[in-house]
Length: 153
Image (cartoon, rainbow, N blue to C red; front, side, top):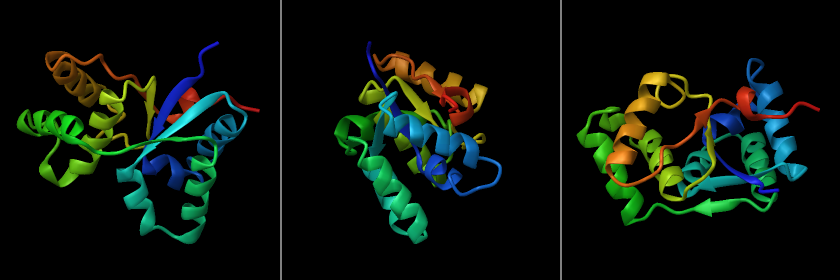
């Protein structure tokens, strides 16, 4: 059985410590630990976590220790992100959000998971990102919140 590769953005890690999101974020981390899913993170996530409180940094380390794949921004992902920018899916202020999508798309992850309902887990944004992905020759990206992906104990 294929283990799904699940890209997580920083909101999922921070969600482990938020009353509203902790149950599902921590369930997803447990799923990584049990091998149900393979975690995928990026240098964007690593940079965002660097400025976070120590408990968030430790949680990130826990996720990485679950044999996580680390994606590094490169020319291909930067070019795809520029297409998102050209088509004004998000403003330049949210370049990192667009880069999460581009990295996950280029790496052909199975699912991107986020709590960012404004810029990422939003029907209209998903549709726009995937229209550009298809136009650029990539497969559509599957995007959900942790609640829709995590298996409960």
